[in-house]
Image (cartoon, rainbow, N blue to C red; front, side, top):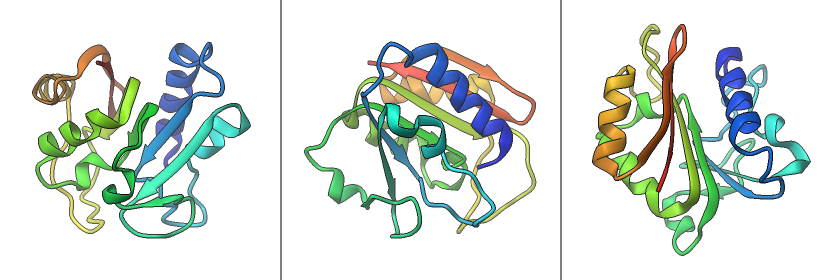
Length: 156
């Protein structure tokens, strides 16, 4: 995870989860890609019940695949620097709704060079994030744009 994404996720934790210590957090797309990278697990530490999920096993992955999530619900779902690698992100975002009770926080780039892992589909500005939230049935709490990323925070 790049530094700005870590700052945005720390802000989300401090602004929205400070009175929810101990809550369960599902990080969708949690795999540590390079050893030099950072993960959101570092932000939530021992104060929260952090669970990393990805499509493939790897470092920082506790649950593999969406099938393993069936019947599970978390207080919070987070995902950063993943949505730009997803086909049909409107459907992907909608598929996350059943897994959270209180908040969802999505961080996605609006500028960056192409970085296929394994593919690179879209960039997101606040209007686009707002439209995706609306399509998925997520109530907007806050959506804002940083230098290179857009942050979307929503609830049910």
